[in-house]
Amino acid sequence: MSTVEIGAKDVKALRERTGAGMMDCKKALTEAEGDIEKAIEILRVKQGKKIQDLGERAATEGTVQAYVHAGSKVGVLIEVDCNTDFVAKNDDFVTFAREVADTVFVLHAGEVVGVTGLLSAGVATIGRAIAGAEGYAGGEVRLSGKLIPSGNREVAQRAGIGYIPEDRRAEGFVAHLGVAENATMTIARKLSDRFGILRPSARAAAAAPLTSRLSLVSSGPGQPAGELSGGNQQKVTVARTLAHDPSLIVAITPTRGVDVASKELLLNSLAAVAADTRAGVLLCSDELSDLVICDRVIVLVRGEVFTEFTRPPFDRDKLIVATEGLQEAVDDH
Image (cartoon, rainbow, N blue to C red):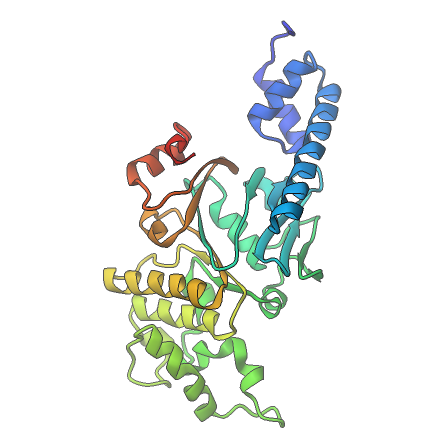
């Protein structure tokens, strides 16, 4: 056993060069007796073994594993179903992986998985990057083998990734456009006739079942979304997402700023979509009350998976303790 004292500066230097977690860096440095170059090689070998193990599990279980690593050009894979694989890769610690260092999770078809943590944990960052709403330098995103450009929300949407943004006013709807026009914005091309003309009646007919399902209250399909209450504006945002029948829905704090009744309805709608259509739902939220619909909850601490809760209902106090990195969900394993 090495007797070399491992300082915080050495650990920081190794993390900056590899993007590995603090504990992994400390263990590697101890094993390498303080030699950073040897520690890098140790991490590389261990990382390769980890991914090999994940790949074997994916092959035997028919699932797709998820992995983010900033420094080793390893990818993120999220399972939507056994035939539709979502793949995101990143190797730039400065951009996308600035807040997300080592993250491992699996998302099954029809499953609602929550990702939570403190504001600095990178919860929203990973959601935006997967949804194509935030770019990253280096790496790649693939869905069913098709490469999706970094930070290209339109392409990600066409590929089947739905997105409910954190800031509905900035990204969720267009304030001066009507309810129906906003709700059907993601399927405008589909609703147009052979001459490319989209009639208001077609928009209204397509929006009606969506707004009815979400109990959206408005004076009519033409009422500007900016005139609605906060809860109904969020329902417009959710309707727009559900309209194009996504296979993966990324929702970031979807109930922030809405009333209690609207919050319950929105969460139940997401759970119903997962159950009825088998769409995977990735619910990224620092509001613990949002996690009530989740089948599992992954807790991030400083950009790394700290623990996972697998048996709902989830204890709020234990979730709070976990987000602070103080105690793992030992009772769930």
